[in-house]
Length: 397
Ligand code: FES
Image 1 (cartoon, rainbow, N blue to C red):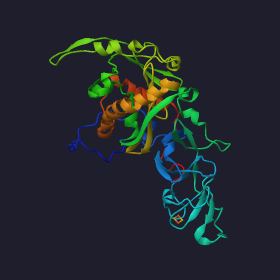
Image 2 (cartoon, rainbow, N blue to C red):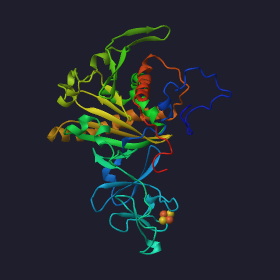
Image 3 (cartoon, protein in one colour):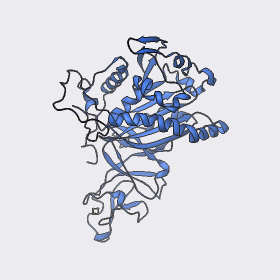
Image 4 (tube, rainbow, N blue to C red):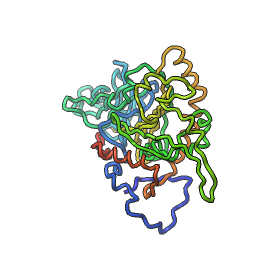
């Protein structure tokens, strides 16, 4: 079945009747992936920046589940509750913070403990309301890492706890001192289109030709690609192939300039030595992807990450981080460079081109070509990983 797309701007209406659909041009080879329009359960997903969550409730939707985030004035930590009052279904994110450590529904004042979601008081039914303590709103495990709020969507273990959040964060980001800049926004399109776009080999060569970022960092242009798996990451390895070709009747084209300047962690080029943390990753290629939808683009001195967080079938939370493993003045210099240039060039204009394609593309049906090996390898990786597909019947529904 095709992913559900309701909003398709900037696209010509399909002719009726449509062209015949070729066998094998859909996603039936990857049945779990095909059904995963809302992503996967049993994973931690980044939501908003932690500094955005205070006393005022913040509603977020993750993998189709509506969650209200709020800072607990007793502990200072952030709590996550299902954003729906069990009484009559009003969003708790519209509620009031009337008593310490609680949130009160704005409609009839049912008041829930932020820690365990228990109905602690019913303001409109007196202190002896018999329903108190008998009802709870579902809670979500929440952790703060990298300046972001991570929310766990899925089942708890037998001991009532989720797996550690570190399971869903690249290890180098939890094991090292670093400085980062980032953007966090909701974009149109299903999360799988965003993930596939990130790992898509062909688009880097063509779509981003007009990106200003390319004036500073070169794009890969190879035609001999291998995909290897290492520590849960799929890594796109592009053996260096320099070619100059005559496209019959079209003209000639050379990838020489890019090929010569392409930086890799093991070949830093004109920018000097590779950062030791990045060199230690020992990456055979510079773009890699892993579950539940994290892309890593490792330059010799810094790494760009993208999280593709399913919101609903037609929206993806796109979290971009640019990370340097530095301290002191080098960290400060990077921060300044991020805010004055990288944020606008790379995390702005460059990835806006990706957002455009993710919004307008409409696949399957599809006809793949040689560089789409990256897409099929990713789908197979997901299929083989034993994922639990999220459905609208997930917890809290
Ligand atoms: Fe929430 Fe009535 S709907 S208290």
